[in-house]
Image (cartoon, rainbow, N blue to C red; front, top):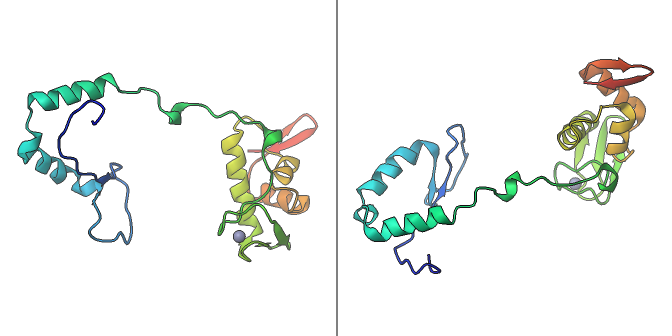
Length: 177
Ligand SMILES: [Zn+2]
């Protein structure tokens, strides 16, 4: 607005437009508009005289439309390669992947924060990450083993895959869906 020399008062709000969104224990008094407040909020805006259509606002609207960027960074594809990504299990408490884990068959203990997570939960999360990043890759015991940074035994991973996914055969190889 400064750039275009348009001076109208600005009030900023954080607006949640997804009707299914809920924010628990939100502090009172913040300039937040929740989905259920959206309609009365817009009505209130329309009632305010400053928002009545005038030549200045029309000019501003035209500028906004002219400067609209149809492509945002969200639609740009990221390029990444399996080999160049760091393998390992993220700690669900401190997001650390750096220091690693002491692992038993049942749980992984983060050497950074000391937090523990169940091995099965760690495998499940790692599979979800893997499938999100590489939807075309087939899920195999060796693949998950490598993706988890080779800190969970293949035996445990295989057992998890057999129990939770469908086993598929392709020639001599086996994968999971
Ligand atoms: Zn941790």
